[in-house]
Structure formats: C-alpha cells, structure tokens
Length: 502
Image 1: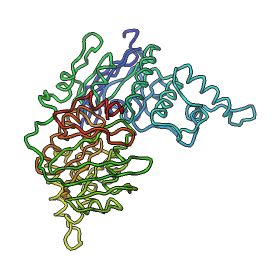
Image 2 (image 1 turned 30 degrees about the horizontal axis):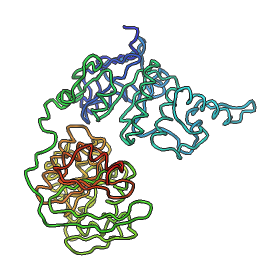
Image 3 (image 1 turned 90 degrees about the vertical axis):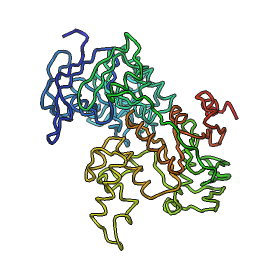
Image 4 (image 1 turned 180 degrees about the vertical axis):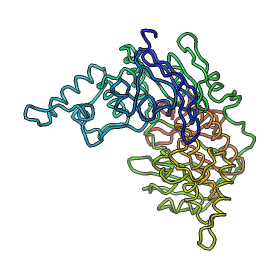
C-alpha cells in the first residue's frame, strides 16, 4: 500500500432487510487530500460513511487505516482509529462550554478530583489558536454560538481526538457565503497539515472548487473516481455520472404566461426589527422570487403572509378583498399554503409515517361524516405518490427514512392537495440532490402552468433566475429592487442584495 494512503475501503457491501444498499463499493483516501463523495440521495454515501464511523457493520469488504485492517463494532472504535465525522446534525452538548465539549470524556481534574474548568478553557483556547480557528472564548456555552461556530467546535473536537480522517457531511447547508468561505480556508489549512478530508455535498460548484478527487456513487454502486487536480472536471460530467443521464435542460422551459389577474397583494407590511414597508402583488400562475442575503427579512415576510408572524402595520388582500390573519389556520382557510425552509423541524413529523404527514392537512379527504375511511386514505396516497413520483412507494414508512428530495415532494403533495390559490416555498431545494432538484423545478413549473400562484424564497441565484417570472430583492429588511425575468442577472441581484443599488 502506498505510503500516503490513509484509508482504504474495499469491496464494501451492506444489506438492509434483503436490500443491497451498498454493493461492492471501494473508496481510497490519501493524506493531505480533499476527496469529495457525491451522488443523489439514496446513492449510498451516508451508509458508507456510517460504516466508516462504526455505526453500521458491513456484510462484505474490509476497512484499512494506514495499512492496518480495522474491525469497528461501535462509533468509539472508529474515533480511536482516527476517524472524525461531522454530521449535519451536530453532536454537541449545548448546555456545556466549548472547552467542556472538546474535552468530553477526557476531562481534566485537580489534585482533589474536582473538574478543572479553568485549565480546560486555557488549553482549549490554545488548541483553537494552533488550528487557526477564529473562535470566541472557550468558556462560552455552545448554545450561545452561531451554527458556523458550532461547526468549528465539532471539527476542533474531532482533531483534538487525533482524527487524521475528517468527514464533512453537507457542511455549508446552513452557512452564509461568508461563513462558507471561512470554512474553505480552514479545510485547506487542515489539508496542508496532512489531514485527509472526505467532503460530501450536493453543491457541485463547491465540490469542483475544493476537491482534489471526486468519487461518484449511484444506486449503491461505485461509478467512477475523477482526478480534479489533474484536469478541471466539468459540472455536466458529474451530473451525467450521478444520474446516469445528461440533464439537457436543468430548468424547465416556460410554456405559459402568467395571467394579469392579481391573486395576492401586500401593502406597507412592517414588523419592527424584521422588515419595513413591504409592498408587492402576485398574479395568477406566476412564480415570484424573493431573494437577498441571509438576515434580509425574506422568511419573516412570507411567514407573515402565512399568518405565523403578525405585522405591526400594513394590509394583505386576496382576490381583491382585505384579509386578516392571526394564525396559519386562518391563512389555510383563505387558500394560502406554506412549505418552510427547515422541513425536518417545521415541515414534517419525522417519527410518523410519510403517509400520515401527507394526510395531516387533508383529513376531510380521507373521511366521510367525520369517520376515517381506509380506502379513501389509500386512494389519496396512491394518487400523490404516483403524481409526484415519491420513492419508495411505501406510505407507511417513517418520514425520517426518506431522502431529502422525497421528503420535500411529500410536503408539496400535502399542501397542493388542499387546493391552495397561493403556495409559498422557502428554500425549496436546500439539501436536495441535483436530480431531485430538477424534479422539484418541473413540478413547480407544472403547478404554475395550471394556475397556481407561487412565491419562492431562495438564496440560490441560478434557481431564482431559472425559475422566476419576476424577482424581488431584499436588503436589511427593505425591498430594494424588482426585476422582470428578462432583466435578471446574477450581478444585478448581488448588487441589490448588498445595498449597492436602490
């Protein structure tokens, strides 16, 4: 084995209830290398990493770290062998300090056996400084940190445990552009120190920018490893390898024109500390984009339209009539539906079945005279599972066990089944793979073509430009610019988002 090979996973096979979720997959990581692992949701990335992390045990294949064969039976075994995995959901104790989290399980004590917090804070501060992390005082509680800072603590914790293999799973999913750039700088610094980094992301632009090598999985199988250092890999090549076909057209052609009829109008909406004097209209069959930097007030505005936030000033009209919304129930009765940004916390009951989640807003459709009818439920679910191509077609399966793309399609199904006039979608494709994104885009386009009016909040400029008939740009709680589809460019959006125009 080559001297610089840190990790070798050979011919890994994993079977769940008779289904081969990984089949003869091999993966190699070299020291001082950023190696991206990509594939659609369900491709097997997470399962492979959970085997590496000691969460699952493979039926076939072997793992070698620095030439030594490993037999992991629990997560602690992998940690001891030098594997640190930073999952999307952080494994920190929020009530403890930064130092206490870093030293968890390895606490320092005084000669009297008392916890030596002072020494742990001092050592943790020095360790952070050695790593080059921009970090607040390590005596601070983790609960007081931003998401980006918590991520840094997770990485520091892994490195403190002498991890030479670092797995980052969708690390920029909830970071701003500025925070992501700081993370990239830190990743390059770790690479220079000889750490091997496995980088998992749906954001192909990041993958192409950061990685030295890229391994593609599809349907639980190894497809190919590309050397991004020797030649610049193209995004279209990655897409073809991931989905098994070329995405000739990522965004759908708009074959319709929104009607002139105005379905919704807001005028002078103001909520102190959030946004001020917001006014705009929404036409029938229009996809209206709202964008801007994180903290611009976008989500707060649409939550007001859904009745989840009460405005201090301003009015909302539906079909030319003023409406008053004191709760989301009021908005639903008026024909407004809302798909939140955080589907796992606000959009789904993860421990209930996906079918139950879809029925939550549609109980009248599966009952007669207030009595639940099993046949109506099956007909309802079969219709929407087929219409939206939700996979697997198992309505009784727990929601958390579906991929992000299929979770999102289930939430969309739940709301379009209520026959709304207005559908609000906040970051509709966050954390979703490229194939599922294209499906969501086609679905939104189809719904708009049938006359549904859509407000789409998004931070991703390509999807704002590719999907919207008109775009509103917010900055620091104010509506700065409005662009038609023909006027849209990334530069114009960025200038307005930064307050340089308007």
